Image 1 (spheres, rainbow, N blue to C red):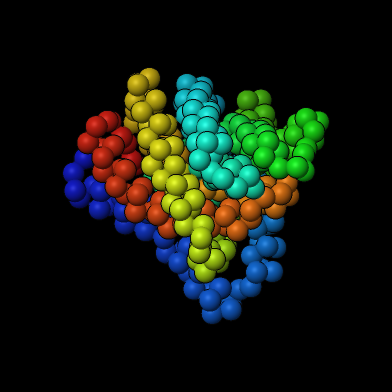
Image 2 (image 1 turned 90 degrees about the horizontal axis):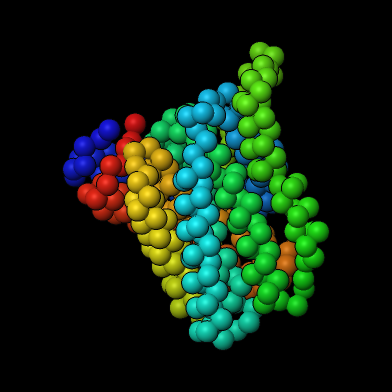
Amino acid sequence: MIETNTQSVGNFAIEVIGPVVLLIAFGYFLYKRKVITDSFVNDASSLIFYYALPTLLFVNISSADLSTLLDIKSIAIGTSATLIVFIISIIFASSFVNEKENKGVLTQGIFRANMGVIGLAFCAKAYGSEGLAQAAIYMGCLTIVYNALSVFVLNLYHEKSTNVLSILLNIATNPIILGTVMGLLFAFFKIPMPGIAETTLGYFSQITLPLALICSGAALRFSALGELWKLVSIGVIGKCVIYPTVAVTLAISFNVDGVMLGILYLMSMSPTAAASYIMVKKIGGNHLLAAQLIAISTIVSLPMTIVGFYLLSKMADLSLY
């Protein structure tokens, strides 16, 4: 375990946050130089969501020891924190946000974290393959919660609605959930994979996080903030301060420490998920607000993660490999 001092915080910033920042910045640079285009980002994002990320989750979970990785208490804490923040956000949006089309978008932007890209990248760098597998199981379970809450809140404030069967079908066919479930099945029944399949899947999974971070950088848009700055500021505070504070407070209260506390912290500190924009476009709402919440929370969350790590390392047993 790294000692909780200024040097450890510096190491955390350089070794864990640094590579993520550089790849996001590189993606933004490539987009500005027109090396990659919106079409490339859209196609690559589809490749990541439907194939590469599920493969990464499957590869890391299928070979893991579930007896050491399946942490029900942490999953329950993550779910509880999400529900608490969801309720707070929806009460605030209903009471203080005037425009109906912005209420659900703001609420989703606060509770839906980008665990699949930023969170996994943090955990992979901090804890290696075992930590990545543990984070993947945690993410798979929380993804179900995120999808259900997102569909509910966006439907609540918009005329276009989705029925219960459609919600259940979307959850059941979510590639991230499918990859997680398949990995759990292979790990539980100890199903062996042929060497060629294991090697091929391993090669393919390695493109996931670098490509996802580059696409995240290329997708950042700062030009349309305008009159939305108040709502974006509220959303970013909710996502980067309130949500992780609630999650970590619950975790410490229930004696979660060490590696799992680190994973829970890093996953909850992730910025607003890019999937939130897709959900808003699909169901209806202010997609410009959704895009700005993603962009600004991504930038703000990176230094905030370092600050949060410093504060948390002073108060709790926070482990990093």
